[in-house]
Length: 75
Figure 1 (spheres, rainbow, N blue to C red):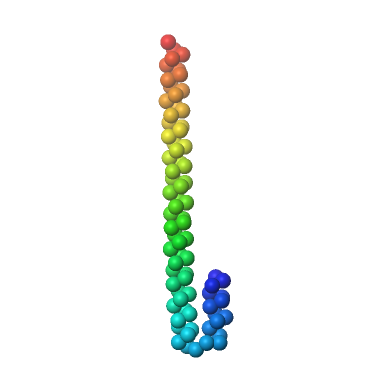
Figure 2 (cartoon, rainbow, N blue to C red; figure 1 turned 30 degrees about the horizontal axis):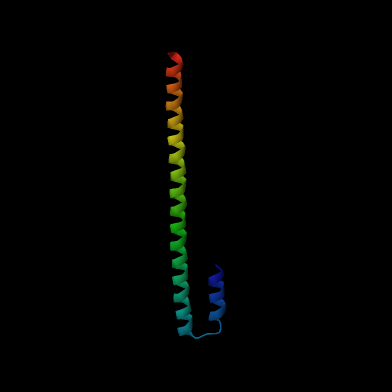
């Protein structure tokens, strides 16, 4: 948003050609930001999935351990 506001301020005192160049440059910046944001969100999603998988594995191991303890106590 800040980049767009700065771009609008700059375009008030420039020619139509310069306005077009600035607009294209701003579009590139926004596209890069959008890509970076998307990649960041993908990374965060992958991290949450990894944590979730680790929790599930830990829980499953706990159940197996509890069953093994019950078996040993039954002997």
